[in-house]
Each structure stands twice: as C-alpha cells, then as structure tokens.
Image (cartoon, rainbow, N blue to C red; front, side, top):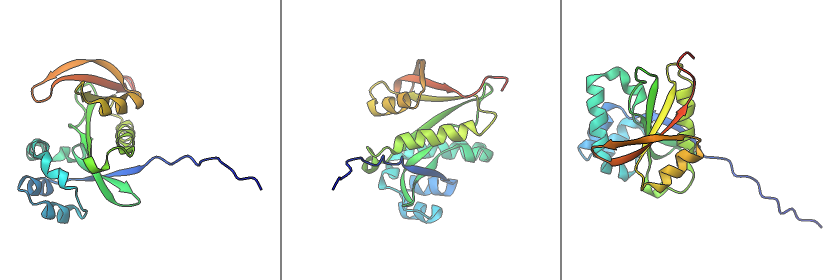
Length: 182
C-alpha cells in the first residue's frame, strides 16, 4: 500500500467589504459597539473601539461629501464564516492624477492568517475595476515590518518617503494600474 504524502495547497482567504455607514461610525465613537453591530448586522471586533481616530476622520469626510462613502472605510468580512476580521478602504476617491491610497487593519486576534494579503489583493482588484484609478498607493511606517512585507509581496514598488504629522516618517509604495491615457 502506498500512502501519498502530497499536501493540498491551502486556498487563500476570501474576503469582502461591507460599508461602515455614518451611524455605525458615530456609535463606535460613542463607545456603543453593540449599536454599531446592530446597524451593520455583524459582530464587530472590540478592537474597533480603539480606532476612534479613524472613525472621526471618516465621519468628517462623510459629512462634507456623502457621495465618497463607497471609497471609504468598510468592514472586512471573511468568507464563508461571515466573521469581521478588520477594516479596509481608500482614503478617498481618486485624486486629479487618478491615485487612490489604501488603508487597512486586521484586528489583533485575526493577524497571522493571511488576511492582510487577501485584503490588499481585494483592494487592488477593486481599484483596477474602476477606470478612473491609475495608481494605488500605500504609506507605511518603517517600523511596521508586517505591513511592509504585505505590500512588497503584493508587488508594490517603493517610490519615496513622506512625513505624516501623526505617524511621522512613512515609506511610500505604489502600484501602477494603467497609464494616464488609459
């Protein structure tokens, strides 16, 4: 009898995004996680209450320009489980040059499972599907080793550095999707 020692390759995680609407963001700013869960119809990680700085930024954006909602922060849902494992989105719609900047965070209890790679791939795929987007950008602190590994594995090119008033020095990575003419 011969026993096969071949291992099946594991499939990458499958994720989708669900909008975190203004009322859910406000609930999290008010420390009402249960209300935010009720609004979006999913259990959110308690870690989301630690992200108030982000919820405030995105809520302010929504109040100024409600039409940008589809570009902003969304819950990351793992399939088929339906578990919210983090949040992701763009900092806003494409700028005049067709650039969008991505941002995402995997909740601490879900890190190390390949979800960040799946999220990056899904964000790039979404950006690619939108003709106005020419470039996807990611900015990362030099000491964020895990995120640096994710963008490098995702084939982003290091194109420079910038200073962020909150995060300090950030490395800038980009992926060109198409030229300015299409």
